[in-house]
Image 1 (cartoon, rainbow, N blue to C red):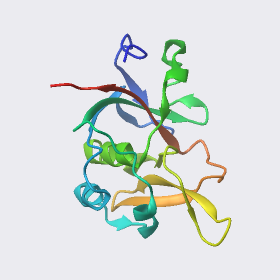
Image 2 (spheres, one colour):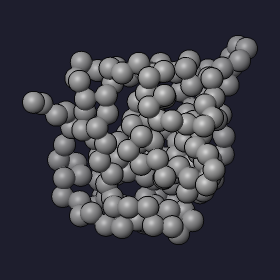
Image 3 (cartoon, one colour):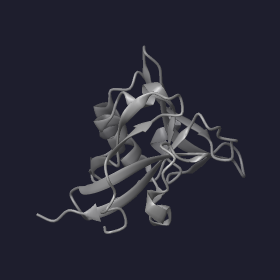
Image 4 (spheres, rainbow, N blue to C red):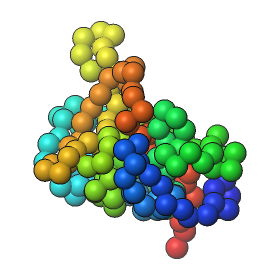
Amino acid sequence: MAATAGLKAKKILTPHDKELGSLPFRLDVSYRIPLAEAVELGRYELVDKAVFKLPLLGSKETFVRCQAHLVNESGLTDGDELEGRIHFLRHACIEELLAFGYHYPEAQRLFPIVAFGSTVRIGSQPGVRQTPYLAGNAGERRLCMGARDFAWSNAFCFLMIACQIVTE
């Protein structure tokens, strides 16, 4: 909760030098919604069927308010180091990736966004570890799966989360 509380909102640039928004991004994530329903809410033109094999994090809470950060191979997309607090962030899971896609649908048209917090083995033993990511272009938005051990380039951003539980 206090890990990123003192951060100032600032404009960030994507890996392709396009302005995306302010850091951090605010998400309200429901961990109780079925995966198929969350995918449908995202209104993706293409969905990799392997996404439905991902285990869900689940939660007792109705929703969690999160602060999301986009990090690429070079560090944070705006070059900031979160005032030395990057170690308080964790990789996003599928529920958080879908919430990000729902709240910020245009972001994935600029660059792919990866959620390393969810992984599933697909294929024969031992199988390839796959992780979900959002991608797209001007014409479509996609929910994809990619090899976890792929050499992800600087063109990809990784969704990182610092969460606090919201009580009502």
